[in-house]
Image (tube, rainbow, N blue to C red; front, side):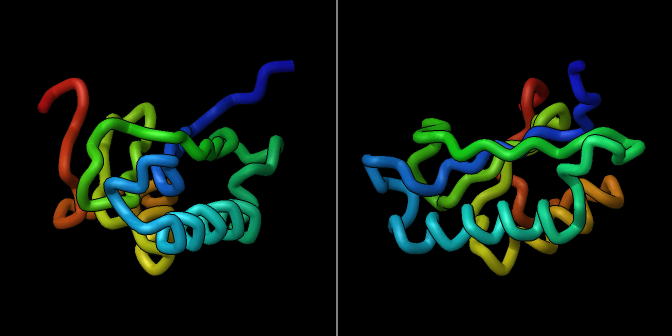
Length: 111
């Protein structure tokens, strides 16, 4: 059975190139992302809005101001997504539908 998906969060945080952020910062961001998704039960298949997927990607080709987070289907790209920002982004953007404009660096496909 294919699950309904509300959002897919793609985090570029531990690239082999390490051009956008240090491996340590990226690793902390990734671990916090995994933890908060579980804590808030956003990966629960019974979640009415659909599950929230998370993927660690090697490179989103921004290579500066990382870690970089892309949220699908909204097409919103966030910069400097430290472990401290992860929870705020999830609670405001994913759960309440309010992107945090001051951290947005790009919107696709519109900009």
